Image 1 (cartoon, protein in one colour):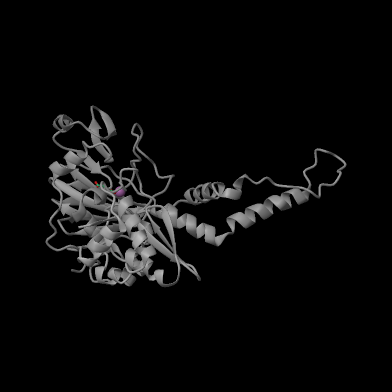
Image 2 (spheres, helix red, strand yellow; image 1 turned 45 degrees about the horizontal axis):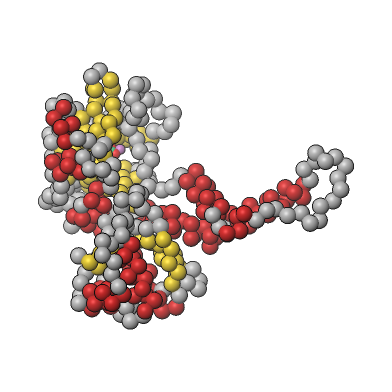
Length: 383
Ligand code: SIN
Ligand code: CO
């Protein structure tokens, strides 16, 4: 398999990632879509699954958006053509879809958003638009004609009368028709428009980076929840001043010291980012095990050679500090020291955990306890 069209992952990252689009013919040769249109429609009827329908001409209104969950008879009221069903987070719901992510591990786990599926009958599309994230658009079933190219931003003209951000005067630069197994990589900000040529399913493997706003508000929220956040600024050396209205420069110096000390704490920044970037997107994703296991149960399963894997939708990452390793799983943080540190690398490298290597760790009671916690919180399971 030649998922990057003859490029090595390093060449792809150097020449295309965040820079320019790439069309890859037969990235996944002979690709069979693991879900059918009916199954997508079924998922879109379920509570807890994020789904949308976009209709190009909705009784005269352009590009109308309808949010799921839908009732099953909703689909019989749709027009023959020119609509799209979108199902978000498909990797969480369908293990065969989650397995696709193993081909994208050359991009860090923390960068992954999710896999979205779209189904459209002939003529269906979500309109010409641009996204704020990197996306690999894998043609899974049928054919889609993509026109893409040109950098867009907030100032690009938009269609009025729709809640969606549809580009109004955009032509694109290149047009390709993708068949099952073909894939189009698009960096953020590139205009694109994909129109179904027949009954068509496209899988969008999306990689999202935080905005500056996410970073500032996320990190300051995290700091505000630390135990010393309720300490007050003190001033035991207060001096008499001529005018009580003056805010003295040394007050501002002290404020600056607090901000510098708190915002400049690299360890806290790392711990926040690990938790933030692995946090589940919704409460439904990481569900505690129905029957909690004991440490003995876990040891028995590992010794019996059962395959442990990540819960689809769980996110794993780690950071090596000088003296310890912080392991982040589904927004939780575990600090590993000494001989325990390699466990982080082992658990984070692939969704199917290397069981021979894991078996060497379960002798350690604390690590067996950690695996038991992960199993009971629903971040891993045995296949
Ligand atoms: C689609 O699959 O129809 C839309 C995906 C996208 O343009 O981002
Ligand atoms: Co898009």
